[in-house]
Image (cartoon, rainbow, N blue to C red; front, side):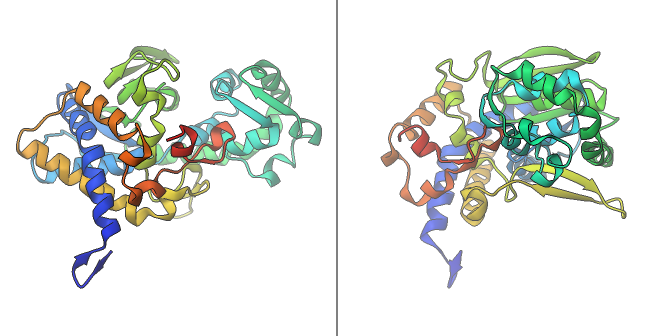
Length: 353
């Protein structure tokens, strides 16, 4: 990163881009969080939560925001939760509603985090080789998997018990209301956590497709969007339709968590999916994070704010052409999309930029 105390040019490029691209949206987001009524405990979710936790801890140390409870980093993903709830037949439509085309075997790997040796011992080859198109085949596939629910349960029980113990270890089973912090959008993780915790939750998202109160197993999951509410993927809202760029940069050094086990010493072992380019070059992404965090600190210290319109315009300007993005950061735009069966995708190529 440094040679003779001189920053490497790639480090400077990534740091400057992080400050320019991420600072405005993060500044608006933490201002919205600081204005939320309490009491609540900030729960930084999934890979995006890696940066959010560091940002909030820095802002608290420098007394730039006041939070009643310190932020908690929760390693979670839809894949982990889908696996956790595989034994609950009524939740399968939630796990199977997203788009997917491919074999049932690859679906079980990508969406539920199963290894081949796990499902091959309990499911027939005919089912595993079956070509599936979701959501069209949702009901048929759910019925077929349902016939083997008793065989699948022993595979997911260690995940269920391990994840429950993990939530308890973080103090989320009681105390102040969890305020789940994430980019968004549909609130699937929040709804499943609400069901698992059996308590009301709040969610503050960059973008919330389903804002307001949703009842989940007798408890309330309240969702709020900071930049936009009430829009879904494909509606034409640029920041949501091209949110993959945001997700590439708001990520952690590890891949997506797909399974968890509680160790004998009461600690936890996490299992991760494949690493995308951002994980392989995390030192460069970390430079972008440093620039973004310093940018937010500067903004709050000098009472600088950004309107939603300014953030939207900036996002469109950067993603209009590839030339608007410094070549030194192109390699950071890489993300895994195993949950849809697409593997690792490059949004620059995906959107023809």
